[in-house]
Length: 419
Ligand SMILES: [Cu+2]
Image (cartoon, rainbow, N blue to C red; front, side):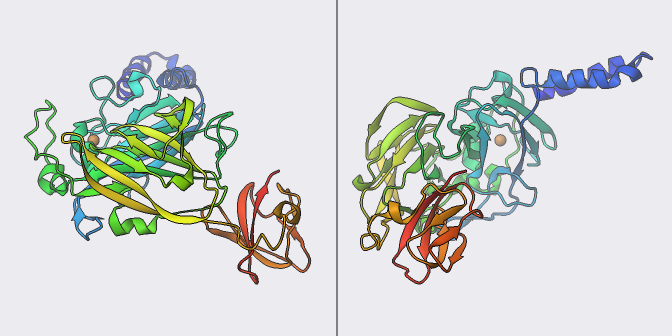
């Protein structure tokens, strides 16, 4: 669409630049042309550009230290290509202009918005919309539809370009609260987005990734797909030690699961997490159900809400099933630790000791002195200091925090700031 419009803009300008009246009406004409470019979206709320690139040197590191070539999307020219590509987050109802600058030196690329309700012209399927050639910019216009979890990927020679790395997650959030699954949906305290995929290193050599693009689509035969690497967010084996899931008793953890590999994923949560499947393929499930095991087939997404009622440590397993043989070929594990609010028993009722909760600018805490405020992913946000039990929390943004007492490291409380 954008490409077609780009051509028609040139045509229109060439046609209208001839008459004398054009100068006076130029702004009106350009405004009209720009309006025509995004017929039903009017004002653009969010503009975002991705750059499609190719590695000319093997630089993406696998868990065994081997390096591979990737093709992928980045937001900065200087940024290395990562697996997956950047997660794109939009707000429900926003008019979005997602543009792509193709700097990959070879094949054309697109951005297919997998699962989003966008019109055909903006959906990135080459024969049905447009391709973006090297050193061209393509524009995709859409209104971010239903809040949920989606995938974007290249749709040119898809099997090869997706395996090369041209994929990422796309999340649409409701406008009222980023910690809500959708309007009137489920409130969560923290969220994790997992993009699961595989890598067959034989598909990442120079001869395949830098293979001249054949516009007729008659590619040379490529090797059978036998992945050796099974990934969660581009990581596997010991690399996953760097991305554990830590939570607290009663914390609502929202898992966004997406599969862009060619194997099926079997995700198994520990029973203590009380996993509830609430969303599928970007839509709320009419009847959410409890299941510790969630099978995610290629292209599928699920939303799973976790909440532990006791402290424990375990792992979340992700199995990778070869769909030709139905054989489970690999299992990856992510550490999971649920901790409690230690020391609260001796301090009695937390509700009365943290008051008010939710708090606005001031709060009373059970101990005086210094507290460290952690966000729900465990990152230190700041410190609170007082000689008595009254604390000024006006510096904390709206949200939920764990406060840890510095002198009494066994004492922590959970606080919510609302304004
Ligand atoms: Cu591509």
